[in-house]
Length: 77
Image (cartoon, rainbow, N blue to C red; front, side, top):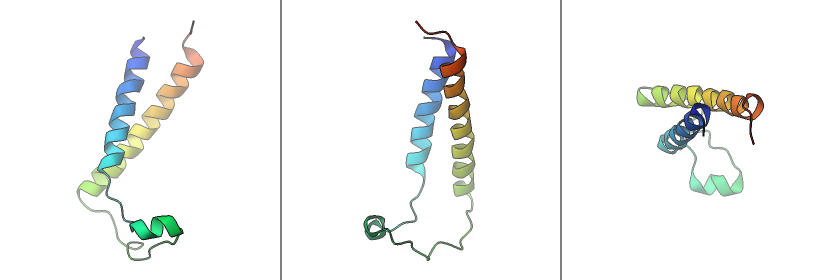
């Protein structure tokens, strides 16, 4: 394992944790019917939601870039 592989593993674990921490705005009933709820459509994110959203974006970009580096530029056996 290289340093890049370890970084990819750490970012993957952090991404899973931060996605689990996000609050769902959908009703469970609407998830099965495919119906969208208009109740939260106009609300802005505040406080910790903004931090979690931005962290998710940064970790997603880092995961994508690390996956590309590991797949394309590192020699494999």
